[in-house]
Image 1 (cartoon, rainbow, N blue to C red):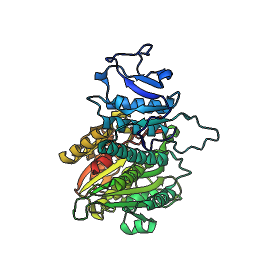
Image 2 (image 1 turned 180 degrees about the horizontal axis):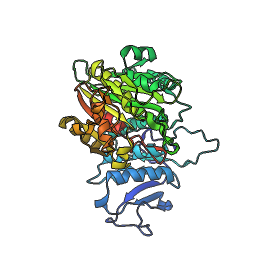
Image 3 (image 1 turned 90 degrees about the horizontal axis):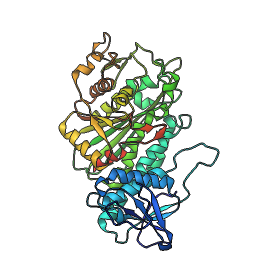
Length: 456
């Protein structure tokens, strides 16, 4: 199925697909089953039955759009206005169809040697009277889903196709087409000069150099306000010497997702052009074992000067983020730090694959991200910061902090407290996407849209 790239303002030869609800007068022979399509081809018309109008929501329409993209038995021209109700406005309808269809129809990386099953039919969006408001809704939805799909494509790519050096190069090349973005790539020597000892400690076991990619957008040069998004970029996580069991090593190609989420958000921001200063930092390496890999009981010095005792080499994401956060706070002069990471299994046990865990140091920060998430229909759930969660980590006899809390309690909260130590007291939001990023091996990539919305 082709991606949606434009409106159609004239009727085509395709059957016109309209929404119909239970409370309406129903035509003869209509199948009264939710989501079922009844065709009246002598009128070049089809209806999709959507049950009670009072139960109809943006979320249900988005799922309908995704299902149509995957399962439509023929090509249709969709009558957008018929899907609009008092509760679900026309702009919501446009947003749901553009995002839903383009999410399902997008073809991400595949090394399959046989033809992948795709729906050969196509859907088009019909709107006779295109207003400025509907045009803006369409363009914004298309830009956002393109950014999300960019992240999904990179995320699903196998680790032998995408190491740290390759990922940095891809970003550098792809972002050349965005003149209002400044991209800086830090190599290993430059990272060493900055004293990013925690990132380098994770990289010690790798055959590929670590990279830090900085992407900057200055939408309001007269303002000192600046959002800095920091993404965890572990291109594969073996666990290091704290080796993961084989089952839990599967899917660890996705451990770089936070880094491509923040980069993808910058792509959309550069096109939507908010009057705000925003930057992204990708902290990229893999976590492997070789003769020089980081050992448990080792102590490393962070960019901030704080020392960290490694009691678990599989808690590496917080190490690379710690140096990234401090860089954002001190070198980029962030007034708000936001990190995104597939950080803890604990958040999956807490919130499943439904909600992204969010921590915020101020009420204003939480209100802003909650509002953005609501507008983009992404589910988040606030989690607590509390000094009790880092008591164990502050108990090291040889360093300022241990990198893991071994009490077995509140693992995602202790990870958040560890990261907070490196924010230089800048307002801070932490997003743990371990549950919502990839589901059943498939790339979802929550929070791209929310990060963009917050910047707008």
